[in-house]
Length: 465
Image 1 (cartoon, rainbow, N blue to C red):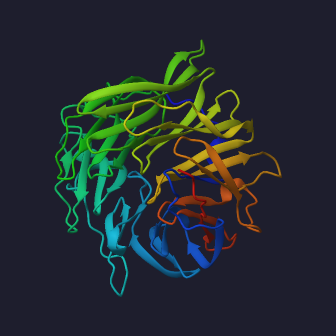
Image 2 (image 1 turned 45 degrees about the vertical axis):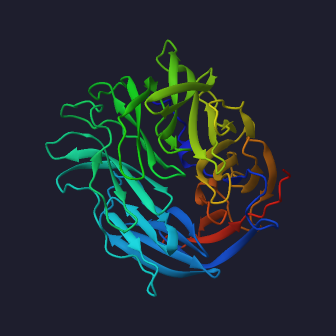
């Protein structure tokens, strides 16, 4: 079973942003990082945000409604209710995806709604991509690839049919291709009973196509965590599906998975495994594993092992130069209020990973890794909870750090002055890869539940050749 975590680790939230920049010359506009306040309010609890040219789209849940707010010109220019229905949460939180030409998608358990680049610029009717109306669908992942390709992958199956990992591609002409079983021939036949723990990750390749990584049980689901298999497959730009391969198996303790696809036909997955137990049954040792599948061949590497066991979150991201960064947050189970965040780097064309370079050294106060996204120019941007304390002085601090493709930390920037971030769980921070920058949102404290926003635009300095 996953290692026990303090309830504080699920509710406390303090954030920093990390911009990962590489290559000979930075591609963003020169100058200092700038926070720009946004007038107006965002209704509901924010769940995702994306930069789309000069505008920023923020998805939020307000009871039965999925609302998309458009931030442009320093204000909340528009709000639209994309759908109104009881949100079950079994399919995962809604996502916003930006596409070329000013298009965008809102993906939820109700289906997909498309934003067209016309004079109205509103999301259209919700389209279902799950091909069955009676059956199971939950735990989804969304990935984009060049040319406007989108993949949505989920776990489930039609009523009375086979359970497994399925996926559907959005084609450049706006049509959805027929759903296919990505895990064909590998996902075990499960008897009636509790559903397995679902974890799926997907990534788009720079040259087109996708990589998908998922976990599947090795036997019937019980109260005790059985051995688990991590499997993967790739999908070409034309929709050709590779045969699934096993990346690893054992006592997987990661709640979720992460994936990268640095090249077409190549997929990388990362997770944490339990390797030894104490007499009382708790984990004594955990190891963080990264595995690469290319043309059916699998190469595994242990990034690091922790003893005593640690609660770990991993995020992979492909860089523009063809390399891969693995950002890792680790907190010892015996000391849940001490944690560190570091980066491993793999250069293009090699299977070697660099030693870990720390972004946040282990110190008193909980730190958390929020997310990682690739930048349109070079490198990636990640959001990190930083230095969370306890007691009346607890709260959030926003920090921005630029680091190279090799994981070397660089310049750091403070958050906006005067932002009322009094408690760490009170705000959200999303990476905006296309800007590059981030969206910081915090509650107004009034009713109905609403948030204010401030947008960060990262300035960069040219790096020597």
